Image (cartoon, protein in one colour):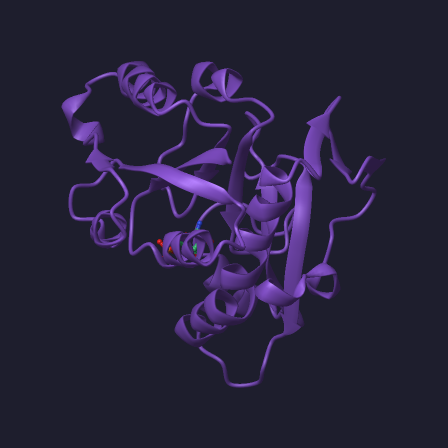
Length: 219
Ligand code: GRF
């Protein structure tokens, strides 16, 4: 079984979906550790409830960003992961960290990348009058929210939706489905990064996969 380490900072709903699929056997991987940069992240509690080792490295304890990165990289390495999954991890990591886990690190971002990298994506969708909103799972590279895209799920922006309503719809209808699916594909060896391109089942992806590609346990 492939070993998964999850990096979190917040509520951990994406983590919970991964834990649930791991318990059900559909993730085809085991979650061997959860690391947070915030002690008050509810995600840590979710990990403990699932009997997964959980640890916090408060970033404020490290005056230099590079020191935090090194400490986190060492903690991740100690868990010998095959896959590093960022699930609502809200610190930007430096190149030294990313190079250590290149090609085996995934992130989920709440927008249809390359549209709306960065923060406040739901507000920005409304401000821009976008017709569609979605989420993207991508490989992590030094370019913030810019790594090769694996899968995107989207929906039409409903009239009268607030940013909070969009965030909730995106989480329940899209994020909690596409992220466990992407991790399962990676764990099975069906997904990889080769020469900066996503390869899925041996074929380079020109466009990201979509909700139509979800397998039954992830629908
Ligand atoms: C999600 O919207 C994710 O896309 C973003 O941060 C949020 C994390 O939520 N990167 P949770 O901690 O998984 O509940």
